[in-house]
Image 1 (cartoon, helix red, strand yellow):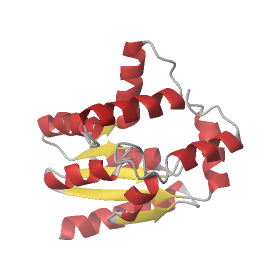
Image 2: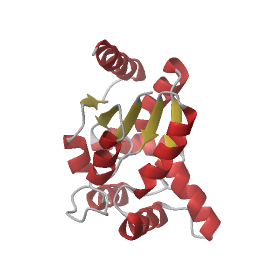
Image 3: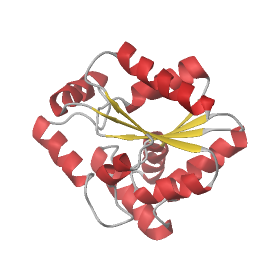
Length: 186
């Protein structure tokens, strides 16, 4: 069983990589976003990015930096199949997942304007924001020293594979396929 974690900037293509891995390679997908939104709905909170950010950080502060991804890992382990955990946001999540067995971290990034256009197209309930808010959200999630808060920069630096996704889906799929071939060859 292989676990691939996916981290990356907002709108960079994490979901597109998931689409390829789940659809073309048979991986089972576990989403931090979906898990948090389910918990937000259960608690009767607004389904927006601010609620997700606060809830995730509160859960990590109360239960440890890897709490959310540990919940997803437990589900993944039960499946016994190759799995994806999307979206890794704290270095503690990476440390925890690396200790649990075969784990590879993918990171994806793209130009901010391209990423913003992508989030507008996907029409998610948490993505109906201005470009300025988009940049502010990303800054908030990028560089903290608090181990219980999101730090995309630190996570991306720990990636085993980094994909720059400024082009087509086909090019991203080719790059991910090459990485899988390398992983499977080890």
